[in-house]
Length: 346
Image (cartoon, rainbow, N blue to C red; front, side, top):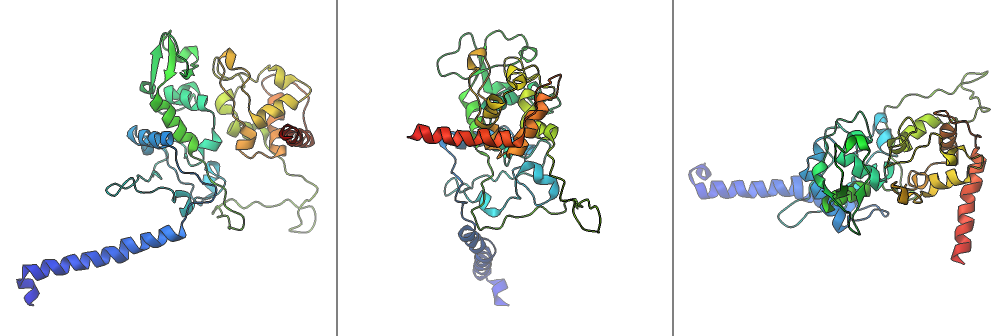
């Protein structure tokens, strides 16, 4: 064929074929995906600091050990309330005409998945301590320390975020350990990673390959024991929501997170203060060197029964022996929050 003897026609045909294939195999499917996978209504674009933090996340190699994808398999339930969908990543746009935005879904889980870390762990103080020395909050952690994201000053200036590092991890440092702007930006990005709730009417993806849960029956096969109410494991809920700061032994971290072992709040027969702190957070001990506790109950959508289970675990562990609380007590106190808010609004 003459086309093989004419390099202009040969290369021209090759270019046309390449463009056609690119259009049908890449560009048109991508445009169609953009139309069908719009951002979820409750999602938010990253702020300037969060965007800068994302760049630091990439620069420091965090993507090598952490994923940001909740797969539709049962083992991924610990990372999010539902499997991820394309719309979860719809706000990831090109940086500019020449550069594409990095997708940080990852492929390795040497460390835990971070899809929902902003809700699982919303404490800025915890994240900063974890970056400075991961072993200070998670004893068995193999994550490297990012101490270069902090600086030591003789005196902290107004506006500085001082890190309250336990003595055993200060390594002889006598000054104030202060978070740099980059450390704060990285934490801002981590705290922005939250799984957005699906709008009403949209089917929720299911987790596959889960364990078959067989209901126990007392009579005919397949008849469930309706008399048995669901039980919540307070120890497991404490581990998932509280132990990273207050530690598995309830002793907290000196100068960082207060102890629950022997705590007056935990041992009080009236659970109102303890329930309020779990649901609304607390900042009353900043003067003692402790950070702000986030509203764990609200952030993690804890049910009254789950809050009661956590509180009862705290009240009966590590030598504590306080009066147990019921889910109804928790519901009553949570309902009082709404009453107080309505009075304040008036």
